Image (tube, rainbow, N blue to C red; front, side, top):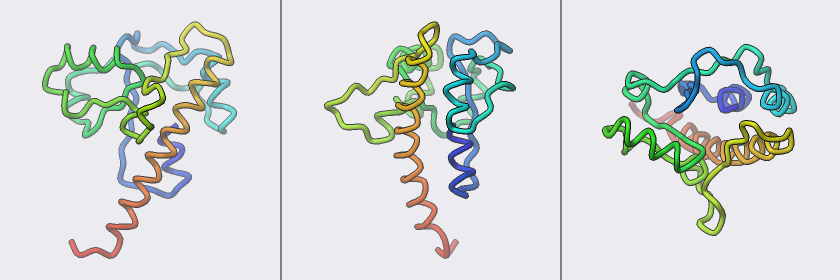
Length: 143
């Protein structure tokens, strides 16, 4: 979703990749997830799960996760990653009076997947605003 949103906004220079903490490499996205993305014009049919590796964490400046369990798992497996792993909603600036977790809909109903997509989308829209302000702030600046 973030790649799609960045492209639509004309923001370049940000590499986005997706990894799982309990993924089976090569597993396709569920039909429910594909359907939820399709409502936003995103085709998820070619997406395949990839398990997070130490090389991914070395490459990443920022790792955004949906649940605290994901964050704890990454930080326990890869202790040097603590400074780059954040809950997506927290990093995007969600207020402290709302849940900072986005529940993984795996195995849930189509409405669970749609709810998840909307929560992720709302958080990514907040991130996109931050990226846009950074982009505006650097254009024309001396190097």
